[in-house]
Length: 123
Image (cartoon, rainbow, N blue to C red; front, top):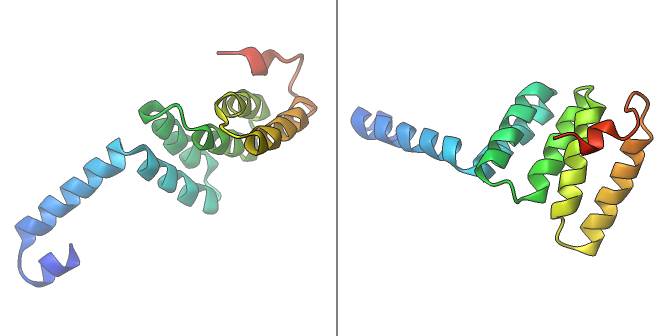
């Protein structure tokens, strides 16, 4: 884009920006990367939005649900974190990953303020 602008090709620069924005909106992995950036900045609501967008585009990726669980937990919403961790566990594709998610879910189930398994089964 900068090359186009420096060489006086503003139209090509605008086309490039438009294509880049379309990819950001429609690629679940681009949404995942944006979510990670929000998390790094401590903006967990922003991270949750981008993780939800990634899930809307490709709900079969356990890492997206795990990321959303992390954003919810760090944002002070352990009941929603539990729900997403349970979804990540269901989608996990290896025993090692399932074990990691199971341990995290077990910890969340004991977290104060999450009552009677309600959030785990909420949809």
